[in-house]
Length: 202
Image 1 (cartoon, rainbow, N blue to C red):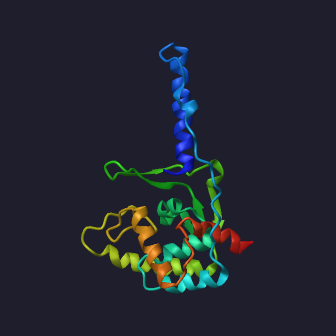
Image 2 (cartoon, rainbow, N blue to C red; image 1 turned 120 degrees about the horizontal axis):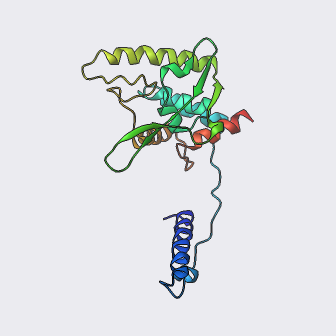
Image 3 (tube, helix red, strand yellow; image 1 turned 60 degrees about the vertical axis):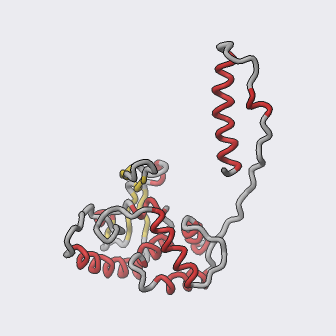
């Protein structure tokens, strides 16, 4: 477990044991004697301008190529992109409205749409015209996929091959494959595409 998780767990246990002390169930709080790991600040990893171009070029040919273009050019969180519907996109104004996120539950493999992370996460983001063109082509391909038997239509912009929500593990696997193809050796995570957006904009 990470240092953050360990310290957070210890904090919860300490509160519970303090309650037990107050109820005279315990005579001392055992969490006080635990040596906690130090929190270390993770170095921010981002794509340079050249690496971003390499990454986008390497993604061509992938079914989910437009998803990674969207993540890199919009700065959205992965769960926000996976929760997008076509109604959230405005092709006339070249923007997208973030209204919800897709959440997968580990137990039972169930999913649900939920509110974004914070109030400020409900926002409208302007998108480059080139990305809007790519999204239009992506929609044409998706309409062709819909003709297949078994399509479940949730109106998602980035669904699976049968229309259902994509899992984060699938999106991460493809991301790692593209990164390898682009010969990017940085220990970059999927979420770092969001950080790369901010850096490139600055």
